[in-house]
Length: 435
Image 1: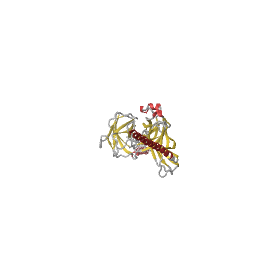
Image 2: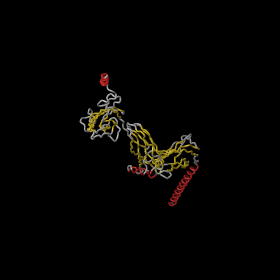
Image 3: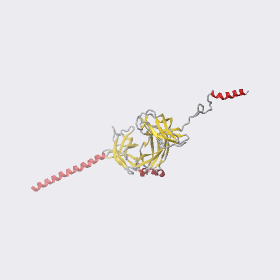
């Protein structure tokens, strides 16, 4: 009986020698063949991007000596030191030292357990690289404190060549007119290769906002801007968006330059928000506001004349003025033009254009167009057009002019007769004296 019990106990002790490792057993150096196997290390990859630790930057093909930062976390239980890295990137990316060089980086500080650290490499980007996502690999060498030897970790990651956003602003019509409300269109252009999103623009036209800008915008508080904030949205590369504003300019800013500062907030291709300042410049012209009035027809020395006046109710003289007459409808009046030079402010300028007919004169009503052509201070040519109806009467008869001729001839005949009589009297007196 004791012998039977002995063999049973011996069998129980021998069985583990013939059965493989249990799934719950942990082997040295890890979790063995457990289905919950995890291979923890000291270094964990967090992020990789172009830029420095505190600022991501946009890059495009052809950029040189660009910082490329890889961020890690020390997830081990000990501090690490002697951190060095090597970067492996696809074809088209090379070390700033030149093609064929190894892309290396050293960290000048230790990394405490549970803290993050980074390696910054410097990279050249070939001009044929596309804007897209690329794979990369980084090798990190480090040592644990109070431990000899060097440990190595490899991390695969993806990074992106974002392109570069370039924002420019300009006014489609850079001239404003004083004493008038101006409808302004401002163009926001993304001249770069990266998209920008959630673009928001604010016009800084208050005294407080102006204090933080340059002194060259000192006259912006003198104008009235009805809109001051615009939500532009997204702007794709090589495309534009437009915003409109209503600006009233007082008379005192005539012949001055108005500078409106704009604060532009947007998100770049990394998803980071940026705020930049731009200035839109305008030149302020004077106002030339012409009115044609008192158009009529008079007869002067037997010639029918179209007369009228032009008044300038603005604050700037019109230059190089011309008045033109053109027929409308079935009128056969010939076109004609008169030069009137400057059209001064608040001083009526008269004009008179003789009427000539193309063919037989037609008397009665005629539909004509009076056009005033002039230039402003920036030498833009402007026009004022007035359609009127005039009445052309037959010229008076020539009786009065014939009477005038008789009145001239009769005295001449009398004078000749008196002269002949005086000459004869003198000749007769001479003959009598000789006798």
